[in-house]
Image (cartoon, rainbow, N blue to C red; front, side, top):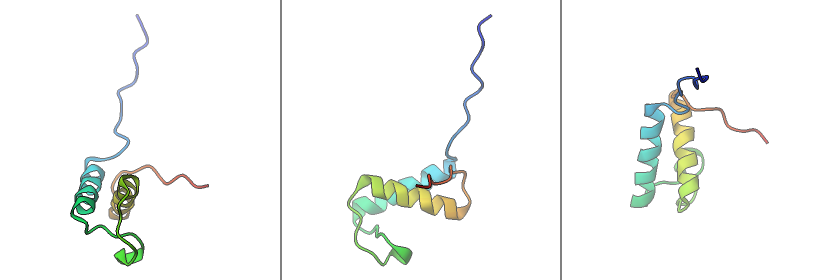
Length: 70
């Protein structure tokens, strides 16, 4: 019998996905801002919007892998 792969686990929680989706919608509307307290410039980059969404999810306590430290 072939060795079965263990059941895949979610890397990001559903709550985290919703927070990222919310950030993407705010980016499309033009209301997503970068920086502490949203005092930076407008976010135009899709990658930056995802990063902001994940950061917000982390602050809420959602299951999100920790940031890679450089």
